[in-house]
Image (tube, rainbow, N blue to C red; front, side):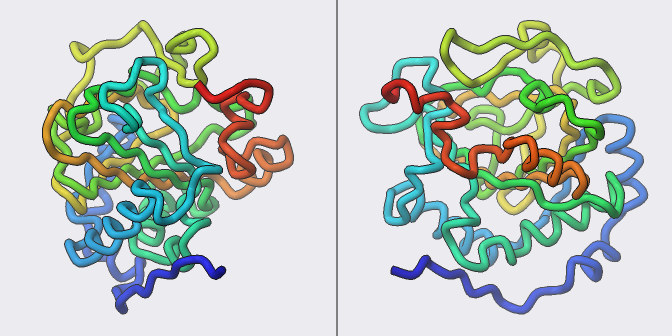
Length: 275
């Protein structure tokens, strides 16, 4: 059985699109703050395409069980048979041409602008907060999850497919934290893969609500967090990640593939039952 396929309309090249953007301002803000908000990364017609793929994955029409888990499994489920935070790693491996769409293309163009021309795609994921699941993603720095690689440049692009608000789980950042050392992290609960730092709070951070189709981008060392979704609306985010091509190769040579061979290897569930 062949995998589903997305047919994209003809769009501007990412280079043409980037020429119309305030790139000098972006570079200055990212260098200073360690994060950036880009309005209207994609249009609503493209949002609808991504939403349809998203729906099919979350509802199980596209079977992503090899790469799907509950990112909020440190807490009892708020709703029966609904993950507190549904995470699906490597969605682009399930749908042909999904990685040829405007999110991947434009995010990579921005990553090259902000980090250098040697950056390449590393991995992608979906993080879905269903209505009334009300489970936060704790304060952390992505770098806390990584092995000690030689070059730590990295960029994560978090694209809102619904209006992201404070109450449904928009991103929060600590400005300038990418210029500081990584803070101490610990598992959010014993035996759980998710890491958190106790050395940060909303008092230090800034909320970044954005409309559907817009995105935030952050450095791998920038402190960030999201509240749970306490509303009656969905909060869908598509995330793509970039780092130097040499470091992507280094990761794979060291068997660090962000769960591409199966999320259980990351969660260390191959020796025990799913919780």
